[in-house]
Length: 197
Length: 251
Image (cartoon, each protein chain N blue to C red):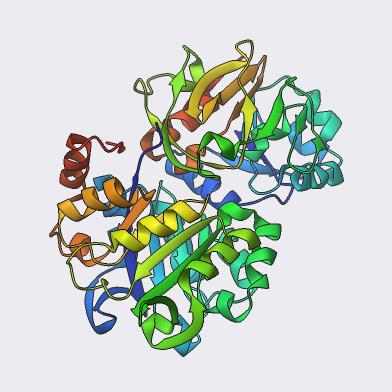
């Protein structure tokens, strides 16, 4: 059963709706004790990374999340939170994965936010099992996670190459919104719910 | 590569989808939730719901409808119509809307754009602009084209971008309902001015119009209503045609 970290950063309704469509059971994580109740944890998030980090700190869950040994999936800003630092609000984040979250450079001739469906080049990883090669996922973000081959499990090009998905041990993050990415996104959520370590 | 988006727009009145010819003579084209699911199935990239009665009948939100849509739909959607306060926007966000579109309320209170962007992020804030060509100028109109303002379209859009709008939905009132094609000149001009995505709206009648607006105006997305609702253009056919013309689309 999936526990969703409920720290007040964004649109949980769409995520829970997507889980329900996939018949994946879920509940909310409000306290440290709640983390014990679930086999898998999702950190959702939209909006401002710095503000989201402050909200997460207010829940008192930071240390417990960092110590988790079960599969954890950060989505969008939830993924950025597991990196070290974001240029958005010059914020220090959880530093579970030592990567930087950076602002897109508009001098590259790109529109910001990166909004819409883009092709994701993913590696052989259980998160993407049975997802067709070069599938598009739905992105909407102004900050991106730098590409680093050590932690990258899926990359995408927009102005420059960056990470669409990252992994370190039991911690996973996806920049796109699986709950809004059609059947492929629902498949990814299902795959996450089936991950065993 | 980032795909160009195809966006069916569902004008909603009293929980039913309608589409006006030049915003008059409304016709009934079905149940919004059912239509939404059908569009997602066909390959629509996202959807826009506009409550066209909202402004003058003071219908604020469609929370229940938004929840029903969010439960069924696995693609993003935007809600517009009658959103004038942070609280309206927050209720829609919590009901599952990915973006909100504001129009009149932003003209009356431009700070609303800034406040929404600060609270929910720029990606949540779509500025809808209805524009009409008058005496050589492009002038912003409100209330579905019924009310003229003193704002020039170009200046207003530039200001909205500075305030924190994350996307522009530009509807040419001169082209809307004519099925004679998008206003590629104006769209191309605005697109060059700004660094946020722009959705073209108003005038779609045939497949070639979409090809034209992506090639000439280089917009990020194109929106239409009646051609999709009445099955005059099928989204899978449209996307095949766009791909044949070298335009990146999601199939």
